[in-house]
Length: 84
Image (cartoon, rainbow, N blue to C red):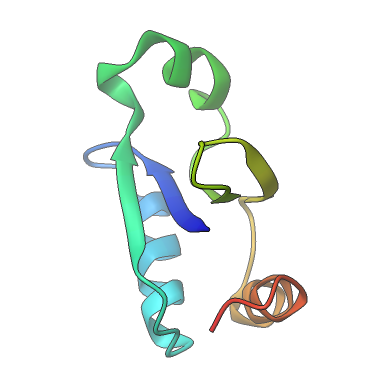
């Protein structure tokens, strides 16, 4: 499985989401994808970023957590999906 943060440059909410992820002390690698360079991703996430997405290796989405979230909600979502 892969954990992805959909984001874009100069997005203060995206920076906050990334900082929250780091603050919960999770060890799973987080891949940050800038949606600005992909028309499909921009169409899907352009007004909803930041979004954390748990995906299978083939890229299919298992679960997503959209903003707004705090550290408690983030930790619950990570725990629910067995992400550590």
